[in-house]
Image 1 (tube, rainbow over the protein chains, first blue to last red):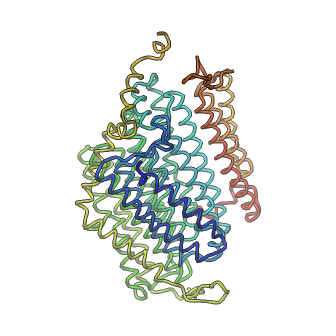
Image 2: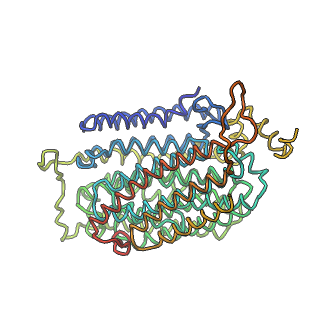
Image 3: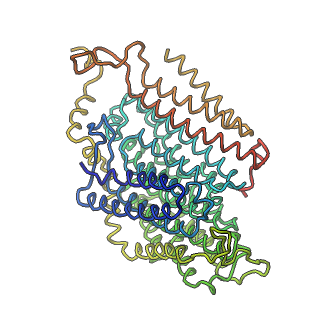
Length: 525
Length: 115
């Protein structure tokens, strides 16, 4: 029994249930949000230490042995993702205390947030392909509801695109699962990995690989299927945007890493080019889309797309170093991108808008906020010694080693374009003086519970921003030990035998013997 | 039976994609419904159809006798139906609210967030 593998899923569900019990009590829901996410943080660190010591930790749900039951399994990649999920959950919970208004909190903001975290954790930990689909849907349903909470016109329009494209991706994913089950007769990912090598129609395996690529590509917002993201991420309340930006697309990227290293490693001859050019075009279109925008969160949304390209490029190059770089990019991006969204909420509170043209003068007014933005934005652009530099450096180095010079050159050029957008935000929001026509109707005032105007608790919003900015700096300073961790992940992912043995245990030999005996001979004796 | 099902499922996918490409949001959601149902049928069919052989273990034995239907795809389809039901219920409410706010059943009139 290894409870720490199941707890990151169970704890958010429990916190969600508790906050549902206290539906009418705002203070209790707020307390549960922070306490529940603190507990999740503790459990995730427990899981991380276990995985760090043993390499793989598994739990067979309901005591049914793999491949018959559902296995939860944590390797280094899962453990790192779970720690990041808990970190973002905690940060968002604290930020929400100040930023999310009572009208949102009344309609189940906190229970939905817990449900979303449960879905994300479940997707990171499950070792069963259909179970992965279920966690995706848990996450999606929670995100749908969070996205339209508040019910403004822009939210509805954004939500229709978000819901349609994500449901389409789910159906493609489900179709691929159905066809995969028809071929190999199992849903356990480790078991599938063993059986796919011996599958009868190798051409069909490539078709399935592409179907999974399309399904996860839509969810990860990769080119050419990213349009739902910039159409919807800037519409909900800022804490929701930040939560989505940090975690949701990364689940799609994680799934790509998982299926293409574990199950479809044989198809890489064919799929590698698709992944490489998909990743490159994702980087370029994302960053060009951002260049044309003048709304704070829309610029950031397009940059999510652009950064997804780097992560997928890490997978596509398919060397241990490249995968390590890809995972480093995921880690860096979760911290930095969440922080940039969180920062965008503070000028919104102070100056009443997300339009860059109408903002200004924040450098003078809030110098520390400017420093936090500077750290995060320049880390995103890849300026040393911040976290983004090392992510980019490792991927570029892996690209040169793999002799993919064109792609590597484009990746570097995209870095410059990222810098352009970030400097644009810096100039407009922090550097220039506040335009005359901004009368700042909501400046320093919000409507409290009883309808009176009160001063906002800005420190509850700046504290998470400060923590994440410091983390971006620390990731840069401690890049060496972290890179050791990332190399372990790269090794683990490209040697799936360890994962398969951890999940199936002694059953590996039984299954291998079964695969070697053709089905016709099995019946005759 | 399987070829017939395959053709029927193919038609359902085609019809669903056609509906989803229309501008009307109502047809969009009907297309989504058809699509999820087609996917469920596909799981059911691709796992192999076995008629009249429930996977029941006779008394006193440890395994069922002869060829029996595979119970796993049925469990999978059941789960998928429930999930699709929940998600589509949400989608229906969403298009109703969107219609109330935008006052049009036309995706081309919902482009405010695109530019």
